[in-house]
Length: 403
Ligand SMILES: Nc1ncnc2c1ncn2[C@@H]1O[C@H](COP(=O)(O)OP(=O)(O)O)[C@@H](O)[C@H]1O
Ligand SMILES: [Mg+2]
Image (cartoon, rainbow, N blue to C red; front, side):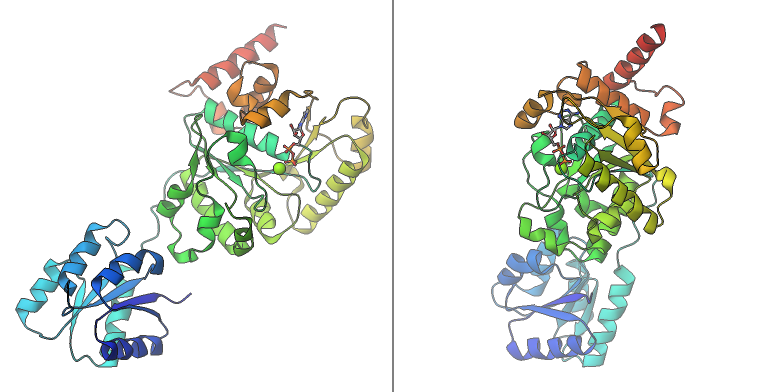
């Protein structure tokens, strides 16, 4: 997408000339007639560069430049000041005000184009620093709804946050009706919707940090859009980009996925190291799991990436594990027992059992599962800081060994 250049000048003719020159060089242009207008609207315009006229009523270009430098959102914005005089004095004033360059008026269009191009190239954001973090990424998925995808994803993520000091993040890609904020009982202030309108090249780790929600367990969450209409704005490229940023900032990344093969879902499945495929012991669920496995195959996803989780979402008679394995021609990796209505109250009050009651049977189950799917490098030696979750997991393992 083309860079937007913000031109601030009280003179209509100057605005038109500068706009024409910039559009001619392929830039998008936004304009303001005075400093007050610019200060008010620059946050919405989000320009890549600003050109400020010096002589304006009320507030001159130098003062506007100084003000922009004091605001976090424009502190690093490339700024060119247009002066009528090319004297050293004027140049110095421009630099003192924090401008990156200045152009004497009347300017010729080629010069303006060249200066903008050079400045953008020189000040274009650097690649984010390469950190050592590389999140292990787990996608929880089922083509059939209501089989516990959100329950497992949320509790797994909370469990990881409680066991390790390493940062963990839950990304809710059920864009239309995601419930992770609800399930964690955190206000849905921000989410994917805020990222959808930001051009990829401006979407960096800092922006991302601002939209992540925080849960008491230490878990961070990227929630679904506040307005469901915004779901449509998000595309697969953006998901790939955001996930790659998340991977560098976290050690564990969990996706709560919707029950479809939309482009954004496929992007997340593609980025995952492990896919936890859920199914309940009933016919339609088994059929959905079988279709999902076929699609994974077509997407060239390695078979060992998939872990099959049989979740007894209902009590009473269901298909036997052996029957299911025969039908879908592969082994079930984990079985979650039916826990009655214990999860219903967890949902109603937004308290995942892994957080609310990690010593209770269900909470412990999820915490142990989180440990089971933790990084080998983390499990291989006791961590320097043993969090309560880690101690609980170890204690339960010792108790099982004694039996
Ligand atoms: N093992 C289980 N035992 C009892 N109820 C369960 C179990 N797993 C999930 N549920 C319930 O099933 C319903 C659907 O779960 P949810 O996580 O919202 O599924 P999905 O995200 O797949 O639509 C919820 O009411 C949840 O409490
Ligand atoms: Mg769900």
